[in-house]
Image 1 (cartoon, rainbow, N blue to C red):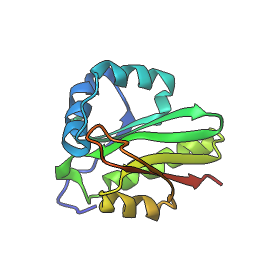
Image 2: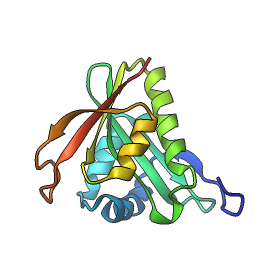
Image 3: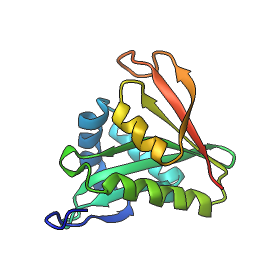
Image 4: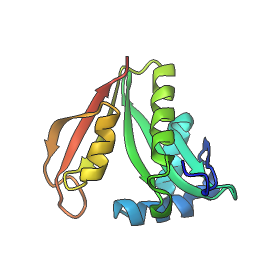
Length: 153
């Protein structure tokens, strides 16, 4: 991470993060969800909802993980504010998430990504995710997605 940028800290999600997370989702993922969704999902697996916060404790990135299948984690949402990309924030979030998955005894992690998002696909490939399925018209705008997965040894 460049030294002229302040470091981020990793912490759990808080209800006061909803407006910041919603804004990051709208900008980065082009989706709009009911704010109550974040509260509901954070209650299901609190350790799976990681927030990267700037020195003023403002969220600049997050990873929302869920577990809907036995011994399997799913990255439901993952995004970093555009001004904090390529500074290691995404790496911190993903590596911490995978560590938490292993600690919980999960054997596999999955996620979905837009087929047009080559940058994200390359990022996930660096974390040993590979495409396992094509999801037709998966996103709200009709774009196809890939399901990607990786083992958790």
